[in-house]
Image (cartoon, rainbow, N blue to C red):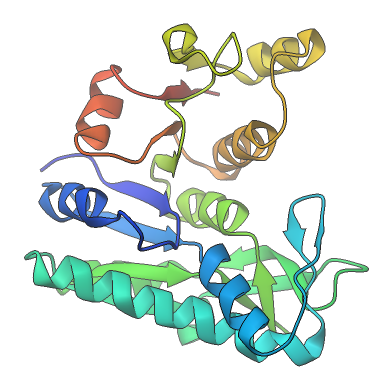
Length: 248
């Protein structure tokens, strides 16, 4: 059996056919955590709401939470359908189901939170029954559902499973020279990441991706990776030929 992987995928279905084929053909167990930013933004716009972000997190007033959850869950259903039609039986869940994700409110952002507890048993039960779980990043606190950043949710779930975490994105990995794929760094440790930050090499949207990879290590993942979501990416990551892998 091939190595079990937690894979974080984006929520957009535009151009997703190649990635769905890649995931459907992977021979080992997978648990997928997905985002849904474009779909959330489109639904909120149709409802007359304006999207606002603070440090990359979508501000989610209570009156918008239902729409955010609807968009995320519908995205999960569509991804599950795409995988199932390609021969990999998949079921979409949210962190509400079976109380899988417990959350804590982050101040000043509305119904936005972070994961403080993961029950991996529902995911493992589905895997044992032959299904690939897709998890929408919705957690629960005492007041109800929380919108959680998909990268940080994926890190928490990977750690609870004790599985490697692969964060799929639109770049080949961490570059030593910005925008130069030929300068991809194959491996990093937390100490090396700190040095890159001090040098100013890590910038912009790559910083939260790297922080999520390090969070997965702290939570219990044996390794994590950032790689470009395309055909052959999982095989490439496992062989060390694609992406940037992070080790404790």
